[in-house]
Image (cartoon, rainbow, N blue to C red):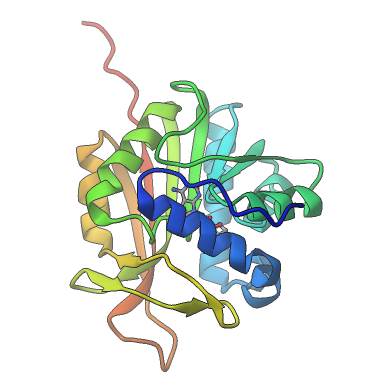
Length: 233
Ligand SMILES: C[S@@+](CC[C@H](N)C(=O)[O-])C[C@H]1O[C@@H](n2cnc3c(N)ncnc32)[C@H](O)[C@@H]1O
């Protein structure tokens, strides 16, 4: 491990995400729930995704914004061939240390080092809420490019109940300084952008915020499929 400042990435919002998650990486695992501790509904969505991608084909699943790799390992335990990609080198180090049997790479989901149609599944688990909303079409185009026809996408994370929210936290995960911004978008908007990118949205789940949480926020899951091309007539 090195204490050198992480290399900047372009655009600047990616550098802010990388630097912030490098800073919190050491404490993240202690502070954030593991898949086993999730509520039954959230866990069941991961199980449904795992079963569906296993049925969709033998290709690998990419866990994008995998952080310390706990969800990657959870999917692997459910019989899914999976690897992780994260912008934060410290998160990737942590994931590789904890799960040496799985593959983890530093990279950005805005420009994936993955060839066209190579994946049977894409999971982005609580990893897209620092992406400015005007950049979401770039992300969704990248998910669509890398998925094979018939491949499945699962997005889960912080969403807005109604109006889009833009937050500028200065600290997170046990008072670590962070410079990223948080953008919460309603699941309806996510679904509309996914359809515009060429996906068929198959399910949406919105879970109410916990008691005491900002009532404008919720937890959302969207499932989508990249359609097969029509058969020639
Ligand atoms: C809140 S953590 C979630 C980590 C993991 N998915 C989990 O549920 O434990 C968000 C992660 O997404 C990563 N991330 C955010 N934007 C990214 C991008 N454009 N490309 C790759 N990783 C990204 C961050 O570096 C961070 O590790």
